[in-house]
Length: 299
Image: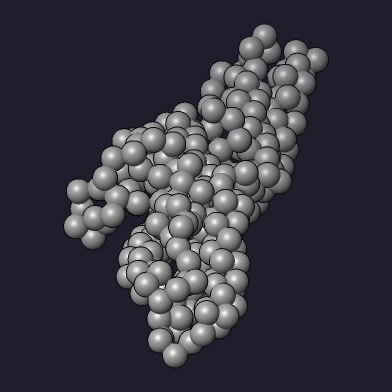
């Protein structure tokens, strides 16, 4: 190599090597400090775009999972109220059967009718007051306006549909906004005394008591249909929650693979860059001293 003073090419080459080592060292320190492989868009533009979409999807899954949990809690509230209503209807039927017996006196039936009417009033009160977060669940305000064509839901009390029927409750249990997959609407039938057809019942006489038995059987069947629907919906939502957890777990693993730093690899890069930086600085010092050596030729 020629010996020149105006342009020290060895120094320039060493400077470039030191700059590269410094850049790699800075990147390794940043990744080790943050735990992220991608800290800025220029670290990996393609990877950043993919990981950001995954991160957005994961966020939607988290909220969808919460929504499904809230929906389960709401349905469990309704089912709990129906369990109490069930007890009242079963007791009312027992009283009606008892009052149908001809050996009871008029006074006996009057006494039985007092309990019967109180139970009926309690059924009505529970149905009208059971609510979750301000949504009254069994007062008929969320009942379907059109009868279901599904044989298992022939009474028309319950629908889980992609179209809104009446004042149906929307269950948004997906990360996107597609009807039937990310959300659907649920109707809850009214369980008031009027809805069940027991509003005017009494057991004050044998004929009324006998008539009440058949009406109460129909009311119990209606209540059982409602409870079956709610139980099926809870099971469905629990499966939805499980599926969301699985999706979120795998999406998080993918996002982590792209975005998070591999500490073993980054520590290796840090050590390598640190050694190259120290060596480069030493060589740069040597390169910068060459013009002084050349100057001795004319000294």
